[in-house]
Amino acid sequence: MPATPRRRPATRKGRPVLTREIIAAKALEMAGDQGFAALTMRALAAELDVTVRALYNHVEDRQDVVQLAVDALLTSWNPPPLHAATWQESVAAYAASLRALYRGRPRALLVSLDEDTPPASVHPNRLRNPDRFLRLLREVGLELPTALAAHRRLSLLVLSFVLLVDGPADRAGDGRSGLVPEDWLAAHADLDIPTLREAAALPLPTPDEQFDQLVASVVAEVRAGLSPE
Image (cartoon, rainbow, N blue to C red; front, side, top):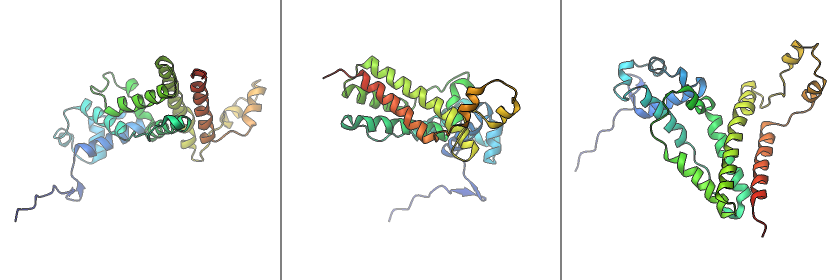
């Protein structure tokens, strides 16, 4: 009877055995919470409760760690199937997948701002998923330049939405973020801004309602670009 191959232990002396996958997950967590500027080898080692030398047994350098974190982020981006017959719903589903990706690790999205040298390679999802979306738009009748413009606008809108709407609302803990913080208005009680004060007093849509409005604007843009039959 052949010998059963031995598995590597999951833990050693009560601590998880270090792997590139564990390093990637922790690096992404740190970058997502604090930005890549905070991701140093010393800080990462401290978070993992290992020595810096132990890290270098699994990664080449800090740039390798950044690449692992970015790859881990993009590995989680798996939009649902996109169908031309229900293209409006598909656009909404694709937008929702982007929102979930960005919202999960918002500061990790700023890698191009935090890093002088961007990741050396591109994860397949970074190419495959936009290609699927562009093919969807072409299948429903958009010319490629118009499809590219729609994808570019959607990506920028979702990124800014997560950073400026979801982020503050998530930090507030109640799912909402006011138009202007009340303490800002109170601190400038003598400032002549009657229209802004009136607007700030109005009920604000929830982030989900605002996101639906964002998606509807992109769907309207796609519809406007379709050639009349």
